[in-house]
Amino acid sequence: MDRAARPSLTNLFDLSGCLAIVTGGGGGIGLGIAEGLACARADIVIVERGDTTQALERLRLFDVRAHAINADVGQESDWSRIVAETVERFGRIDILVNNAGISLAKAPEAVSLSEWQMIIDTNLTGAFLGARAVYPELKRRGRGKIINIGSMTSWFGGSFNVPYTASKGGILQLTRGLAVAWGKDNIQVNAILPGFIETAFARRAKAAVPDLESKVLARTPAGRWGDPSDFAGIAVFLASRASDFISGAAIPVDGGYAVQL
Ligand code: NDP
Image: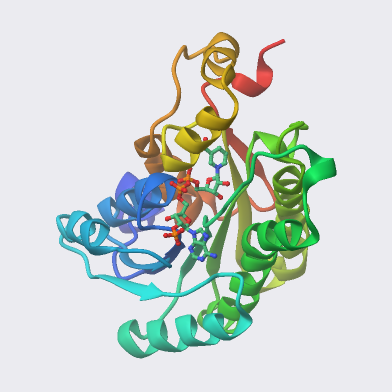
């Protein structure tokens, strides 16, 4: 093999020239992922409903181009706009991270149909709509990466968040189905399953479930809650050539929570 063709860490993980869309990238895990991808030199589009000023400032510190699109991932028409605006501005899409997610702490018998639909629309339908919207562009380029964010509730039941659990279980099967359907197009589709991570989302869960903090600490071999920066490495791996023969996988990033008896 000639020297130039040998794998090197640079060509395995380098995302120079790539464009990644990260939904919910304005804060929390999404921003941790976006910063990881920017560190590997990808340009970033974050899709958010809220303010993105600080997130864009942080991403630009990596000397990449960063842009925000105000949109709701559960709306089909918003996805047409997200793809059109991204392609117009950057000329390409290489990576989609379906990260935006919401939950609701409530006993299942008290959940209304509109609450159920809001959670499924955002967490599961949003990921499907995003994947479907970027597919033509990934196919046209002859390669692509889709990363879906699941949860420990993709595997385990939670009594206080049944619609969320159903949506995150669905994320696993969406990931596997798309991995099978689009393998022929050289598109890899994988899921990351976060454990318990210190974000605004987690702070809301802790307020609603008083013993959550101590239960999580007791079960997590790492002895701590996760931080959004814990997602930078796995995101770069799943977005880069280093993972070209990995598809349909679900990788926990949980400090060992899922393997504790
Ligand atoms: P945050 O609440 O901190 O971030 C979620 C982001 O998604 C927010 O920026 C929110 O912004 C955005 N968002 C929500 N709904 C929509 C929508 N309809 N359209 C566009 N953006 C939206 O949560 P985390 O960072 O903690 O969570 C990120 C992902 O990780 C979620 O999918 C969550 O389910 C998952 N997860 C988190 C865990 C944790 O412990 N933190 C554990 C397991 C999984 P805005 O509302 O302003 O639009």
